[in-house]
Length: 69
Image (cartoon, rainbow, N blue to C red; front, side, top):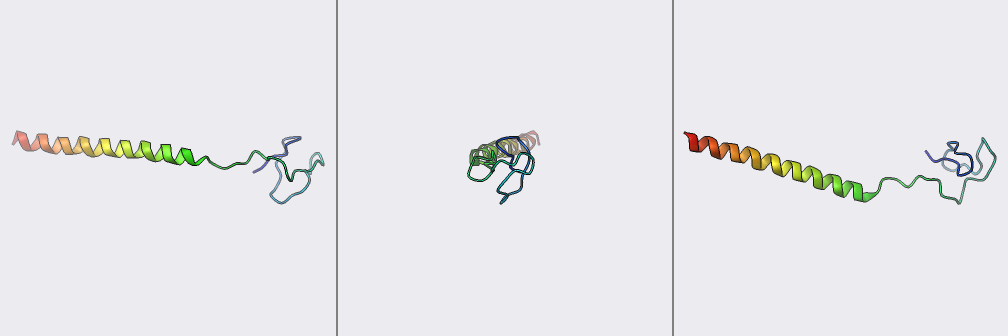
């Protein structure tokens, strides 16, 4: 939820004035920018690396098990 840039009170989207302090809240930065897309890229990379490590580790175990037979 966005916050009033003057007093920090939460306000709803589309609201023109803050109910707490009466100052206008439209047309100024509300601090609500969403999640940076870079976070998704980094998170996907980390998940990919973990999955790759898991696949390589389990594949290596299968090869070692075959050699022991």
